[in-house]
Each structure stands twice: as structure tokens, then as C-alpha cells.
Length: 171
Image (cartoon, rainbow, N blue to C red; front, side, top):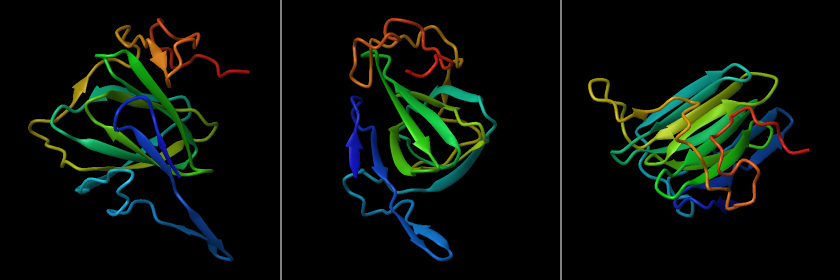
């Protein structure tokens, strides 16, 4: 099932698990998933993060697109458009895998939110250039990240506040 978000190009697609007596099988990414907008993948990366760790914020200005897949634990994955003030927040979980398409021109990052480490694989359509990295970075707690809406909601209590990765979940 495809889901689109209020930032153009940010999409997620549930990964279908096919269980059997040995465990399960799943297709993590297919070039013909046209509804998701799969670009030619040229590199795959692993990210292992201890609970509570934040890896944010950065963006890519040379056309990189990331495809995130949380394999174990859970992560809050966010994208922020500094031109519109829109922020998208997506929970990725190994318990219910989904592939998340992230256009690199948005500031993006994530926080490991489960009680166990988060293991994520992400696929990219541009090779990492060690001599001239396509990364513009700002601090995880930069007050510039001040959403005017979150997932399309302008009434979220976090709107018009510097982004707080530690804001407690809704009760």
C-alpha cells in the first residue's frame, strides 16, 4: 500500500512479508515499483543506532534520493522543507516494514525510538563522493527547524516551535 505525505516526493510503501515455517521472505525494493518512484540504486548503506540516538539534520543538493527501510527496532524519520515550513514525520519499524522514499533536497534525519537499537538499510541513487560529499549539515537541535505544519496539521502543538526530537508522544 502506497502512502503519500504533504511534502512532494515523500512516499512510503508497505513491505509485504511472506511467512513460512522457516521465517519470512520479503522484497525490500524493486526497480519496477513505479508508484513509489524508484530511481536507479547505486549504493546501499547500513545504519545501526542505539536507543535515543539522533542522526539529523542534513540534505543533498545534487539530486540524491534516499530509500529508508527499518529492519529492527523503530525510528522516527523526519523531513523538513525550509522553503514552506512543512515537516513530515514517519515512524519506521522492523515490526511492520515499509520503504520510505526521501527526496534529498529536504533536510532529513531520524531518531531511534525503540527500547532496542534501530537497524536501518538505506538505498541511494548517487554514489557517496568522499572528496566532495553532497551533504549540507545543520545541528540536530538547530532552532531553524521550526515547522509551520506537521504531516499536514497546522494545529499540532509542536507547530511554530523549534523541532524537539524528545517531545513526548501523544497520550
